[in-house]
Image 1: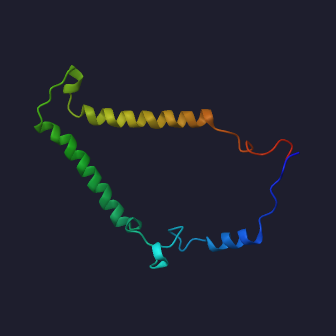
Image 2: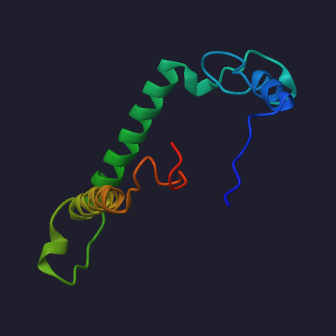
Length: 118
């Protein structure tokens, strides 16, 4: 005989009501309950600045290869920017493999339902 979970208790409903988002952007208020809960990454200008900073650092690391004496073991290692492309393609391949594994290992929506329960 299988045990079924009953309806939620009254206390649980009250807990869920209290757990409503503090504002539209964050699920919880700031620590201590003070402030409006806005984070510095909520500002589009800060996100744009970070993207530009990250791209500048990436470009600088690739351009730094011009001033470094490479000692390649294989001819392909002497190509300009090879390591950047290798890292990008390896990351893209990991994403594709993870997506494929997700499709392969995915369970149906009714996986956790008991047999005969509708």
